[in-house]
Amino acid sequence: DQQVKQNSPSLSVQEGRISILNCDYTNSMFDYFLWYKKYPAEGPTFLISISSIKDKNEDGRFTVFLNKSAKHLSLHIVPSQPGDSAVYFCAASVVGGADGLTFGKGTHLIIQP
Amino acid sequence: GAGVSQSPRYKVAKRGQDVALRCDPISGHVSLFWYQQALGQGPEFLTYFQNEAQLDKSGLPSDRFFAERPEGSVSTLKIQRTQQEDSAVYLCASSLAGEREKLFFGSGTQLSVL
Image 1 (cartoon, rainbow over the protein chains, first blue to last red):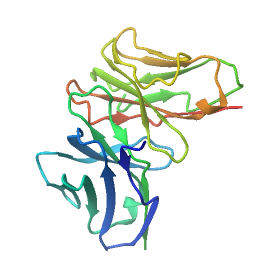
Image 2 (cartoon, rainbow over the protein chains, first blue to last red):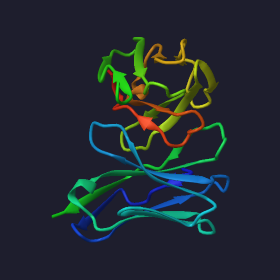
Image 3 (tube, each protein chain N blue to C red):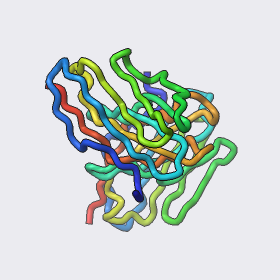
Image 4 (cartoon, one colour):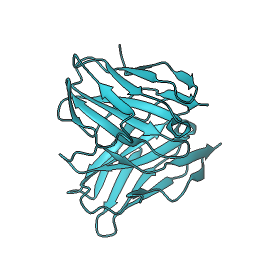
């Protein structure tokens, strides 16, 4: 049973446009959410996070939105750049919980020139 | 070193062999995690150490898997009597004390069991 779902295995966006990656979760105990970015043959790297007490967190070109009632979060990248092409993982945790991070399956973002 | 270092980078094992995967965390990081990533899936939690104490091993899939971190730094994940379903990338991550969520990952060990 997938507790964190990324329903789009891949997404293609033109350079300069906005990329929107979506993530849904089922466990209402999750209260901290993160996005990780992964290039081939490398480990995931932390990108941005959001606590459940917020509905938006912004860091440069990256913004994460959280809709708790819908159990949905999204990552917006604007403007998209070629170096953004990677696999993006959504992850969630219960702060102080015992089970580490729960990851989605990832979305492969391809930025077209 | 500057980042989390894992070795070997690739490991091919015959079914039934024992393997040992090593992780060197970032210096000063007290928390260390092991994750398993099967092809096409996201990383799945295996186990967590704080210094030398293994505080959570709920994700280890069977008693063939065990991990240790005897001096609170380097960690080893050992898999006994490997099976084909153990084929995956094994990721190690570390973090500062109290930072269980913002993890720094190594590049992983790709294990192939034939």
